Length: 357
Image 1: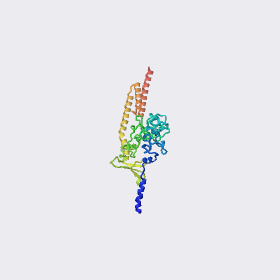
Image 2: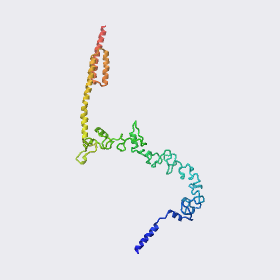
Image 3: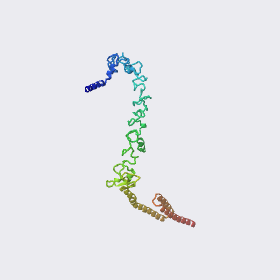
Image 4: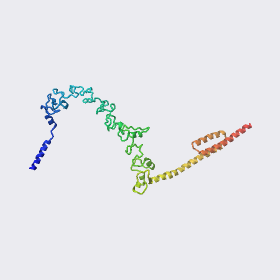
């Protein structure tokens, strides 16, 4: 007996739990049954337009026919007694429906910039920038939003959505190249995609090694796989030592505060401290002998001068050679002394001849 009552109980539960449709519910609330189909189903519809006549259970504000005897009208949005079909201003905002962007909302009616947000204020659809087209939604509505992320450009730190912040684009600009933070096609190069333009990035391949160190050592600043440590023999040839003997004391990661022990560092020292000075020795000697040759040549011309006029010309020549560093300053002083001695000799001779006359 007990087992038979269980299925019966379940059947009763299922019967009463079957949902009743909205149409069935609405028809039971009708005072008089009819053929309405729009707001309620099966209620009195005097004019046959599908909208039910109002009654004690269903009034106009609930959706009943505001004009139960006029089949061409059923609603009066602004309550002015004129049906919405015939009413040239159905929402009563004094803006005719043919120019009203929102003919069924009395709080808004115009959209000057055509962005879907209203010129009128104090409304959920009000435009914060009524004269500038924009689709922004956050913080400000209807303002310029170049990258379409719904954040107004004025509050967007990457207005054009190119991955480079506005201030970075401005900082990367120069006198010849100007980057526009509001134009996604005007974007500075960012090789490692770290949002820092290459011209501002001190590590363009994001391998941890500063570009100036890589350039100094000869490794590629745009290749993350190439560092000063693996330049030779295609393997790691160095490490950084931070002190102590623990496992953390040795690392292949760049660390400016630690001691570098590597083939790359050794090569740099040898090249800069030994090779370059050695290669410059012939140049030093060439400059030395060239200057000495100019000095000896000019001294010979001074000693061979036959007139005061020639000495004056040679003095100008000596001054110019010192200025252009063709001879040493010391040699210039020696030549000037020689000029003065010869000039004094010629001046004395001229005075002696004048006294005899």
